[in-house]
Image 1 (cartoon, rainbow, N blue to C red):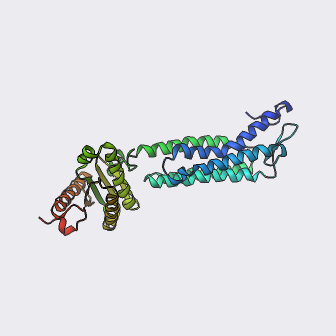
Image 2: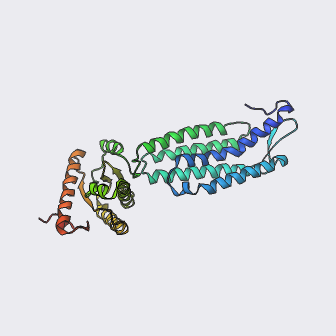
Image 3: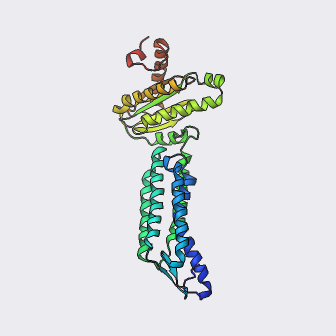
Length: 318
């Protein structure tokens, strides 16, 4: 409802509505980060953003009688104040905070649709420029509402691709991706936790969950820059690696991280590893070859020790 220009008895309503509009529109972005961003560093530092918003609301409240950001005349006519730019800075800052948080979250959780973020950001920025240039238009809250809906849909789609325990992509995401996979230069890498049932039986399911989460963390840190990481079963993981040349480098990084983690948490088991290159076959055939390679890894480690670090020659020695 627009109260600008109504009888002067509505002046107080005009002031309150403008105060809420100017004050709360930056808060929407902060709230979206709080609700929808779950684990990133920006989400954990949200107190700083909240403190900035509270300070801004207090400043805006104090400035109302002086018309610093906006003013409403005795004739109930709204106009911008000499320090209107403060609102613009806060609004753009909040949108920037939301945008950076979304980009980091999409990267953290390997979201394949993250390119959709940029048109969404551009849309909001253009809307803001239009609102600043044409004050007679009232489109800010319309766009904020639309942004909230689109952002929720985007994030909900992203969360549905994730495994809740490990934060890796889930089995449904793996199946969807393998149905449309096209590259022939990549590699399917599979992982299996050795004697995982023994971890649950001897140390409890809480330790078992920590084990799976720890493996997922090492896989993601070693492979996420070069491919997509999945949890495809109870204690089974895999990576769709785009570049075959990166396989050994990523493998060594994973083993280094897992050996370090096992030194810190002695209940953690070894992890078996296998891989198979894509060469035009059905994904089921590639998966079977990767599994066979992993079984050779298991057999080789049992013969040469339990460190989990084998050369290719050791893997295939009988």
